[in-house]
Image 1 (tube, rainbow, N blue to C red):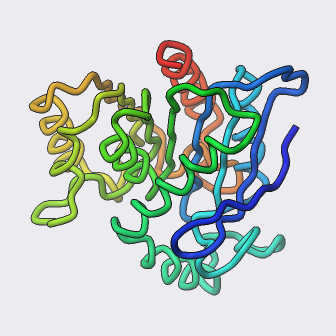
Image 2: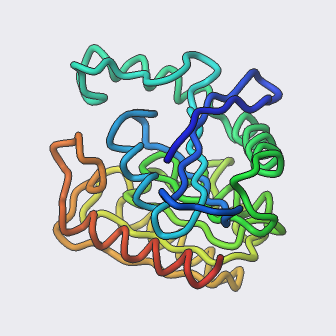
Amino acid sequence: MSRAIEIPAADGTIDAHIFTPEHADGPLPAVVLFTDIGGLRPCYHEKAQQIANNGYAVLMPNVYYRDASGHIVPEDKSFRDPDVRPTLLEYAAHLTPEAQSRDFAALLDGIDHETEFADSKVGVVGYCMTGAFALRMAAEHADRVAAAAGFHSARLAEANDPNSLVNVVGAIEGRVYFGHADKDELLPPDQIARMDEALAAAGVHFITELYKGAAHGFTAKDAPSYDAAADALHHKRLSQLLEETL
């Protein structure tokens, strides 16, 4: 129910996976899934398949393709291990807003050239650092992105940040959903409020929900912060958003 593909991009070749339902018999609405900082790994393959099973073709790219292909974190390691995390932070630093923009264009072009994807608008979802990617993609490709979601997102609206997403959300035409972790040190209440204010001022149709008691990373099954109840709610909310928009 999944296959590996390669997508030409301005900065190299993106290795990615397409997930579809088991008995898909034609093109399906596209959903782009950006992994958290840990990159491609089994729990995200599972997550992508679960989304696909609701009737979508899910494209999951390796966001770190500039530096390495495939799974970045060794099988016997965690993305939180002190000997792994510095490498991930180094790779993540290369994902500037400009680099993201080039990748968004490549991914949409890839969708247009693969038979699994219907000729329709797309949804995009991100986790941790890539919650911001989903929002930026929705702003930069407002004509294509019908829905954007972010879960346990990080650093969405830091004060005095010239690259802050609050400066671009005015371009969004699709719907936005955020599922925030309660007391998330990477997204404190002031940032949530700043983002909500920017979205409201721009007239964006959005929902912000606080998952009470959930910690940052609550959807990642390989993280100590994994929360089964919060993860189930995340899938329910994402399913509803995609059903209503795609």
